[in-house]
Image 1 (cartoon, rainbow, N blue to C red):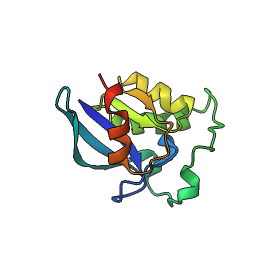
Image 2 (tube, one colour):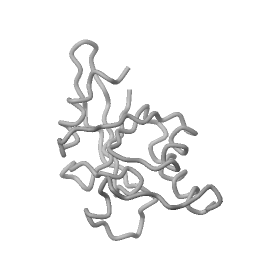
Image 3 (cartoon, helix red, strand yellow):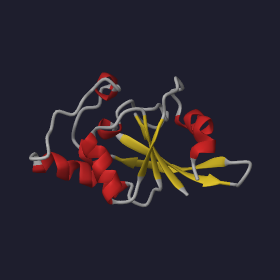
Image 4 (cartoon, rainbow, N blue to C red):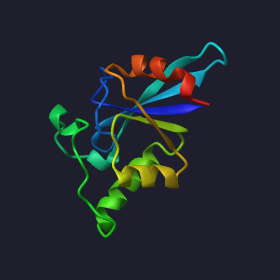
Length: 132
């Protein structure tokens, strides 16, 4: 099973908004009763290609103001979903309706993280029991 986590960079610091993350950390879930996560690598988020990345732009307070008629914006979310379409889950602190819809279209399920941890490895350990 593969899990994507939105992160700021190779420090694996969790990005608050999945749709505006610069990278996705990809993990493989190993084991049964005793689960572990194997880091596969980072994938750039094509939706954010060419944009400056500032941590305040990725917090969970951002809301997506784009509607169903904004075809270009929706296509951008679709490219993001395509980049992690081989994953089973995307961990999110926050995700807009366009992110959720695009992920659903490629079969990626969203798993909400409400904790305070900021490191992707530790977030996954907190969520280990919810992945099935």
